[in-house]
Each structure stands twice: as structure tokens, then as C-alpha cells.
Length: 91
Image (cartoon, rainbow, N blue to C red; front, side, top):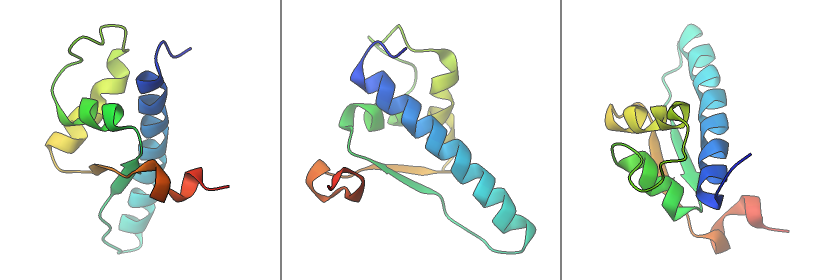
């Protein structure tokens, strides 16, 4: 159970990136080079992935912080997208 909306968004980013990594592996196997780019409308979750450690958010599980290493090593780009242009939020 997430203790904050940021943690919930970070959990969703983790799940999405894990699935993207699977697709990346499949593409690699058939000879297609892909660049992974994830977008989130949660600015706080995007900022957590861009820094080292959890700062004041000490309740985060360590497994959520692997995205920091992925972004640091430039294996994935995690970008902010405003909520009003996020197609996932359209009704």
C-alpha cells in the first residue's frame, strides 16, 4: 500500500519500465534498436528518479529506487508530461 501519491506514481513507473524492458529485450532479439522513454504527469515521481536516494521520503522501498540507476546510466529517459496533455488522463 502506497503511503503517498508520489510513491503510488513511482510504483506505476516501475511497473511500466519493467514491461518496457521486456519489449526492449524482445526487440533486441529480432535486431531492432529502441530507445526507452517513459512519461509521467507526476513531477514528484519524475524528480525522485532523477536524483540519488530518497531524501525526505524515507518510507520508499529500496526496490523502487532502481529507476534512479537506470536514468543515471541513461538506459531510460523519464520525462514529465503535463496532466492536461497526458492521453492516459483523457476521458
